[in-house]
Image 1 (cartoon, rainbow, N blue to C red):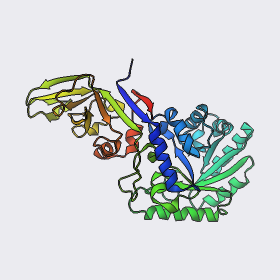
Image 2: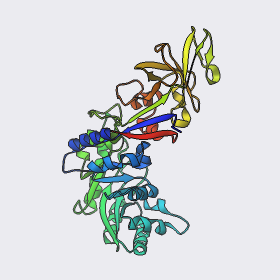
Image 3: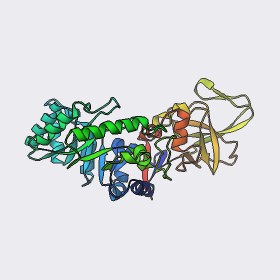
Length: 376
């Protein structure tokens, strides 16, 4: 039986966005596409071919995501962004790490004990482990602190069975109009690289989507774009906005319509009152599908080319829309829940603004009930 929702995932939009990013960063900078969280909720198996056509490498968060890439046939370099300590199980981290090393996954290390576990795992795997050291230059999240980084880099260079390939950091606020914080992080990072023996034989990378677009000096040897690959601006504060194409369009079908009398209320909590006799419809989407409850009484959908407002609270499985603008709407009509037009009032970016959140969260929350279909 067909799903009540269809998520159209555009391969051509992803190829277009990667081409824009490639042009922006230049041919000398490698492009590492971030495909964690099932390609930001859009469906990694659908998009992998399009991404691999243009990306030099791919990055994931978890070990399971890295293994999935290999099982899908990806031969590109794969960087696991979680550090080696995340692979610990009942036998310690070495057992999980050995499998990743055998599958040629590049590992992140942030501490001497992780490096020791990687070396042990390399012996178990009978293969060389390729690692990148991550430096916390100011975000206060993952990474070795700058003062401890040179010693860790030096040890990684000397550890048997381990090949140090890269050094990286992550910007906390490159998507803000004021780039001073990002530039301070970059200066700390470059200082660490210099104190750790220089850039020779090291791939340096720091730039997410925002920095890849807006901070030329932060592009270094490789960039790690994520949200821009899928067609959303990193933020509303960008100095440069590339003409990205959203890769997601979400649709459903009108499943009921009826006429409510003047003064009738609707939805949980009865938060909306119709001032006059009003036609309404039901759309089979709700917060279980990733359509946020914060959009209650605030967002619009589109039927027959007309915008129809959401009335009442978003339920788990359905939403009420007012059909005054589309009096001839019929059960079975397509309802565009999320538009792939970035200028539309129901684009991912517009809906994120209404919710006070970011596009990343909305795409990642797209539920499993939505049937993902690859379109060109």
